[in-house]
Image (tube, rainbow, N blue to C red; front, side, top):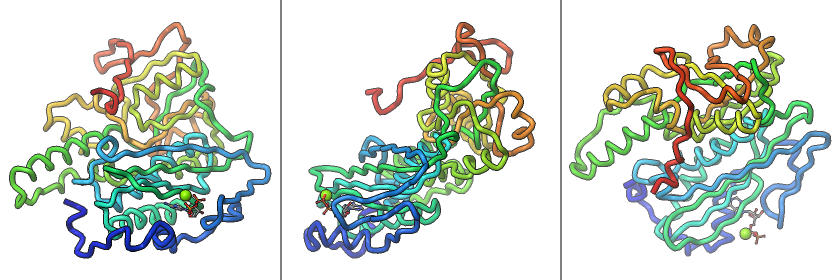
Length: 348
Ligand code: ADP
Ligand code: MG
């Protein structure tokens, strides 16, 4: 659908590989002082002096991680950057550079890749990062995008998953579950479209949850806020794979247990109403949905006054001894063990 909307279709072979790379990357400018050499040589050159460097990679595959029938390429380019930056921020680091590698089949015209790169450029601008390189190759079928993000952090500020201690508070940024229900709406509309392509869906009442799926943001602001509040989390993780599986990772690596309060999980009203419409339990969605690029972290109790009034943060539970296990305390005040649901990419 999306690709066919383009009026002009310039075949990629008209440019050749080098012409294509030059064309797509011509707008990228170097802004960071840590970038010595960006695109154009055999490798980029960086200088971080006394900082520690964090490096993270994500691979996005058409048909597995995204569906181009409802994901505009510009949004895809943007999201491909965001998912990586989120991992950098989860280390309490600042993102500084990315590399972008793509494998693309000749069913994509140049105009489609221009859209993809427009999204990448927008994200680079908003998050103040340099695009310093990548690789471009052909694919027999779909589109693949691999982004590597680089960040810097003062050595004493880096936060791992393994530092949580009993009695620490469990805190999450933003709200959870919306991206998953946004995807459910998009999937539903795709089916409706197949039956009746002239149907113009009214998605106004789902605008927030759809945006959480199609145009997520990474919580760069939270890293700055924590620094401004003089709070160093004892452990941190990004919750892109779903709250329950990330809590399990954090507790396992920290060798602790936790009590997570169902009633404290932050949910947007639009998520709640959409769950009611689909007859799905909103807690299940919040625990297992995924793709909310929020940060989950633990802080020592003495830092609580620094964060308690802040609308970006919700205290959702606390850390316990390992032997107490990982529990969800329900609204009815019963404790049930937290289990990870297998990530959906591997479910079939
Ligand atoms: P090499 O032959 O060494 O792999 P390339 O010709 O592939 O070099 O790339 C030339 C330059 O363009 C390098 O700086 C590389 O990092 C950059 N580059 C290649 N593909 C991309 C891309 N898809 N996005 C951004 N930069 C790219
Ligand atoms: Mg190359």
